[in-house]
Length: 344
Image (cartoon, rainbow, N blue to C red; front, side, top):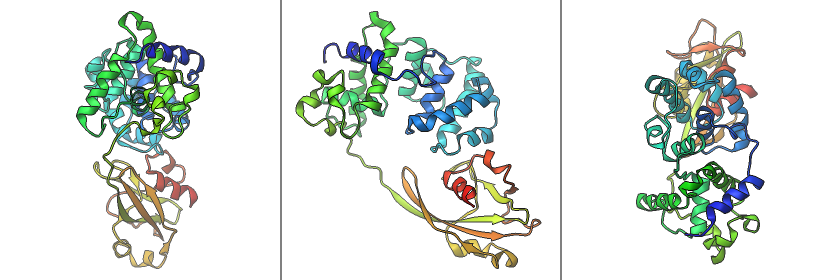
């Protein structure tokens, strides 16, 4: 193992790492947990506003547990990966029900809660309770695989397990427990600001002299992960129905599938299926909007908006409700639906 790696990271973090983010410099597990969930596959710049709004509405885990899923989705709307919001709400309810509103103090117990994986649990336990446990999110994997020139394929569970073991060996010694939070934050900061996926800034990296990948001259070769996510495409037609008062018709999506649990425009597999469901008077007002592509993790959605006007007493679908301009912005809406309604 490279000597002094942890010590170098700690020293670097004190002078060059990030320290002004609103979820830093705290041992409040609620705030650390909230930030960790929001930061999964999401940029810091995007999370900042959401984090502040969440704390205003839900300042404690008890407040979040008492809130409704619709409220949570409404505040989350636009962050994407909505299963995070659903698990976050369930997690808050379990913290209140099982632990009297106090987050467990160990990574092992934290992992028993919905939506908290091994790395998130370790971050909470390390930052808030000083437990000597390693984190291994995407940024940290990149830093450690490069420092160690770890070329195991992380698509294989055995190789990821091996990297977890090495990450644990690299932790500051138990006698230097006070360095644990700085080391953990330092790894996150290095991955986010220095050891980038493309063109890493090796010249300013505190671990540059220890980095095996840099000595090999090919840091971008790491981490190794061969399994590629199979992408698919889907065509959907979305009914943008308006009534005489200018309200829009929205229905709640099923609890499983795309945009589960969110409010959405009625969705159809074809234009003809959409038009066939319209009353004759609404059919005469049909107008095709501009099609666009919305990219999800696993598929591209080719969305075709179709607008139509309805008499207020008519319902475009069997389930749903009319929502005015002062009502729908607070709902949990898929990003493309919010975009359509905002631009309309």
